Length: 192
Image (cartoon, rainbow, N blue to C red; front, side, top):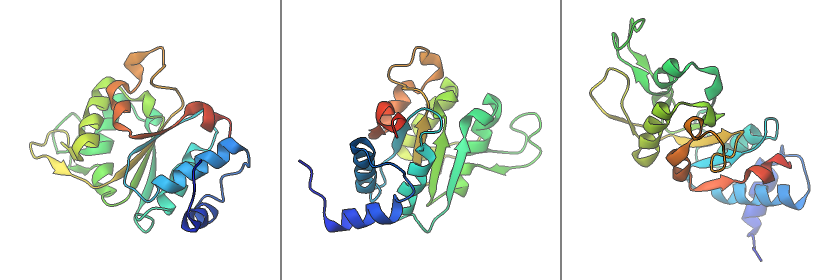
């Protein structure tokens, strides 16, 4: 049996009120989310499209110590493979055709805040490898740069596929999914 302090219940009421549902499954997800919201742990949300993963991500951020810091949603499926790395980590002038000036990446802009990476399973293995490095030590290298940078951004990611059981390992997270200490099970979120 799990016991919750009155403070945990107050957090659930205040920040997770947008999550609609009163089933034991939804209540369990809200309890889990309210507990981890106070931490800086990286979270991977599984669920079908339209099951409220972004609402959970926003509630997690609002209930966290980062609530007064920026929150950004980045739909990974909308970026071409060649542009996603540049958008995420930035680039130096001349690092590729069309890079006419330096560009600050999203992880640098979001330093101190929360970045929600939606449909993370749509990223390439190459980008996943660079994301893995970032998740391990919060270091990244902008395209064309030689200087490693650091960013204290909390990552909440979402996948509309169960990466551990997906049929196409080349299109899923592989070892990157192992760097998400807390996972909200796909089946549970899908039933919201």
